[in-house]
Image 1 (cartoon, rainbow, N blue to C red):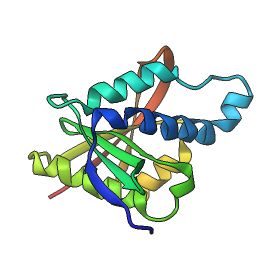
Image 2 (cartoon, rainbow, N blue to C red):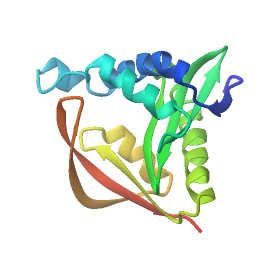
Image 3 (spheres, helix red, strand yellow):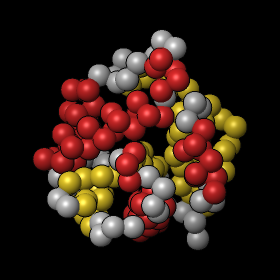
Length: 162
């Protein structure tokens, strides 16, 4: 993997993060978008949400992966939950996702959490398989999420860390 720095996210990172977040969405859900099943999230809302999460004092903690001065991935945690993990499509398959996941898990356990949770869209089979390979368990429990005007179902995954 190329030299990638992991550092705390800054509000100024929100635009670059939203750009690869959008590309990830279009890549992951290309078939569903093409079939008209759903469209991508509203971009300005996503950008604002990311900006707010990156502010000091937010209830979220985010680490971005930066290459050549540009964010190419991130992991966000809050409470006992891994909230986000995204890697720019052009940088996937090089171990960065595993590195960010390990950092996110370490952040959660450093805050005293041993029972971790994350939610993954049911259509995102590649992400679910990735998490399972990293020791996470699909609980079989579904939750309904509404975000940026889009409603979708997510599997709840858990992992116990000692």
